[in-house]
Length: 163
Image (tube, rainbow, N blue to C red; front, side, top):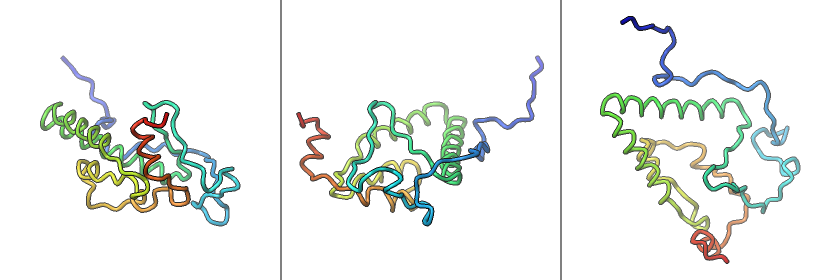
């Protein structure tokens, strides 16, 4: 039996993400200070709550305003899939499945009220091997200018007690 050998690297063992840079992007940041949101262009007030998804199963995907940000997100996803593929090849399918279940359980259990600083994600960082990293998202969460709800209303909403 003859197997066809391809010159392309396997998608499972990619080290870098594929280069698919967008040709254009739309931004609502201030032209004099890129990256800082312009409240007038976004048509939001400073106390507008964060957008929530109408479908609980589909998380909100943030649109990147810069190609480098999208590239870094693709880089992290590619590195995670490479790590899981290496674990699968070394230990079998059970290891990536177990780690995926642990990440899902840790993500579901990580919740702190916003008045206490919000969710830190420490358990997920440890399981991903990123406990020693300090990323942009760790410092600037995006909720700095929004009004923080009080503790009781947030817990009531979380426990579905707000009839």
